[in-house]
Length: 142
Image 1 (cartoon, rainbow, N blue to C red):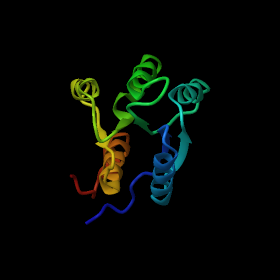
Image 2: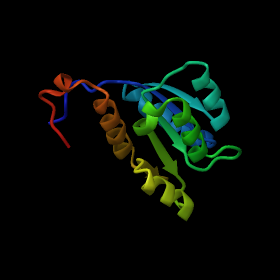
Image 3: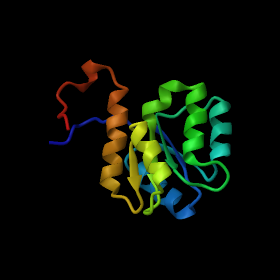
Image 4: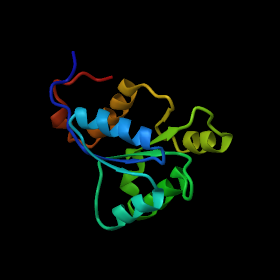
């Protein structure tokens, strides 16, 4: 049985591919989340530096200019509490350097093309982790 009331959150999508941004925005908005999309990691950092906060950040691992992994490191320098709220999206050919980074840091990731339901599940886990324990009563664990 699916839990009745899953918390909806504010999600930032950072990906240089317009098709991926559009797909994620559509899927996440239909799921009830508020979604901002940005095509560049430095613009995302500017937005965060300006005080905009997010419950979850989805980022491409490889982008022109600043990579998603570099953006992740810079975010953690200023807001370490975001550590478990960033999901990486990787191309179908993941370089060894990216795989090592994700594995060593125990970071959630999805490989393109990814399963939308798996993405929703990963977001749900992050959203639920941010809720007080008493809000989770009556919900099935996965």
